[in-house]
Length: 126
Image (cartoon, rainbow, N blue to C red; front, side, top):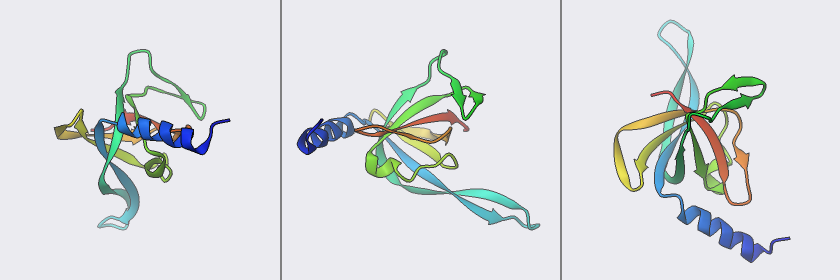
């Protein structure tokens, strides 16, 4: 069993290794001009994240559906706790360099909580 100090040290190391930045885009239902429902996304503040590009072999099934995954993101425990499959994540910086244009990803399935971070599978939408 890990002590609280060991776990805190591991979480600190994980957070220090997150060299990218992103914004969580929270979904919000809105009504269109003709009463139809659509989804709008509200961007949160920029947070550290760890971006891992997808490989040709990555993919699998989420809730029984076969999907092709574009990437994997690591989020701090405090940031990833509220993420749902309805969220999107906008990657704003890679290795400290600002992306222009930014990259937006849809969360695929529920984030997986580990001892040091949340791992979020995503696919690119724009």
